[in-house]
Amino acid sequence: MNQNIGSINSFIRMIVGFSLLSFATARMARKPWKQSYLMLAMLGAMKVAEGFLHYCPIVALWERKNNWMDDAFNWDEEKINDALKNTNFEAGK
View 1 (cartoon, rainbow, N blue to C red):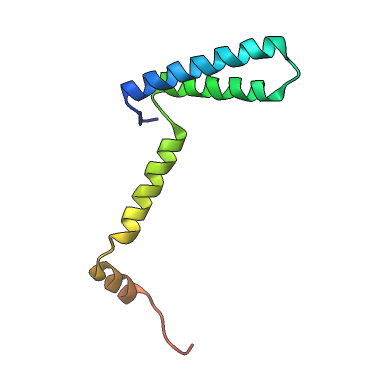
View 2: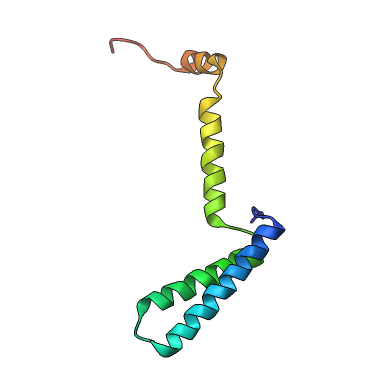
């Protein structure tokens, strides 16, 4: 797993994650029947883990999508012609 976020970004994610986690646990102590605080705690824990590992799966998906789009738009006519020549397509059959 490659690191895809920087040191400052990971530090900010950890601060935000710990803040969300402490807020959610404080609220869950008073109102344990509310599901929204559990979701906030899970979101905070996820941000802390992203900051600790220097890896964000959303950023990885975004980079992968952009790389795919760059490859799709940067085809040369020569590559297209070679691909068409290498196919065994016969019209009318």
